[in-house]
Length: 317
Length: 295
Image (cartoon, rainbow over all chains, first blue to last red; front, side):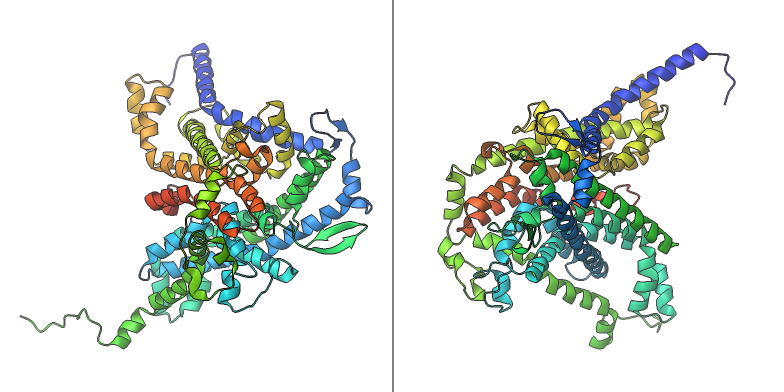
């Protein structure tokens, strides 16, 4: 660095200008980010500790909402928290493993570059580009009791997929996997492509078969994308909403499987559905309580992500 | 002419070819078997949308994937009902999607440019702070967002859907990574010629970002078109809905005529499908543009 004469005033003027210039470039995104994400999130946290009606100012009530949620079995919210979280977590647990394994198998198969692999890739990715509404309309018909493809193709007679818990869950998980597998498949494909071919050749020379090669070269070589997608997939599935909402128009959230204290527990009513019911303008809704539920859900998501990250990073060492 | 053994192109026997290509053969069989199941829902949906309602309700043989009677009645119906104004929905979806594309391209490219090319105090700190904050689950902010939209008087209007969709940080990350590969000499040449930062941005940077901006635009359009959750919440008047939450309305109002629902579904697929047809490679390999997600 050349030695400059003391130019402090000019330099700070230039620095100010540089900072202002940068601000002008950053402003569009930062403004949108602040107004439509940051501030709502902060308000969300604050409102979880308040009583709040649409259009009226918030009333701070401390931990009341949380006391109800965690300790008051006479409140429907107590049960909604448990049922909603339970169903959402169940979805995550059922869906995410397949959301990793299926795309991985697809990516490995595509890596062999069989005949038509480009077409295969395009078609397997296609569902990921559809809206959940479109997906549900099509799949509802697939699972239709009287005339759906699934019952006909598998010779299942008039199996009603919407009324019995194991079947409805199977259906919802299948639909979800079909919808999201393409996304991870693309990520895994590019990861696979960057594993050096020499490793496989050396292994072949040493007599390792395909299976061993998979476990000892492929999987370790993909540990970053696998970790990354494991976490993002979990976060994604915690937001499950459209599938259970649209699966059965007559019985949103599924058939009633139990009654507790006069509140009815639906087979697949998920956390987000309870939160939205409560938070958005319905007469008698309680946005403060909805925020409290949302905060609990948000914290669960954060906790799970952090734990996952720790475990997967430890395994990768 | 020597007697050197030149390896023949044809394998010595079918057995050898089979052995050499075993991987490809197994992969092909696996993919083919899975593909039939995989595309069936889309094929079934499209074909069934062309059946009359009566045909679609019966328990027919498998070969009746293909309609016995072909009809466009369902589409005619769906376009003409007052309860489910599909034309309006599609128009709204286009407006929202195109607006979001413009906003995203602008806001994310200017930010990426600032983070990557400009020097200012706290640059990396701001970048990672924003990135970190964006990881916070957005469910917490949804109820307040609704209230804020109420305050802006945007509820039931398109801006309430357009603006919240542009807050993502991932695109900035993507563009910034791509920008790392664009040589700084171009910037420097421009500034020697007297160009200020905004001119450098407009004349030099933007054009060189074209590949990654195409990817960003395509994903932004598709994401906006397909957005279901938030538009369902923010818009209650059926006339102002976009197509995808509108399909839920269609589902409820046409409970007995599934084929009409399917017609709506197909309409929801068409734009995305057309874009995909024309620009597949951007979807399939676009995320790799300079991204750092490698093994």
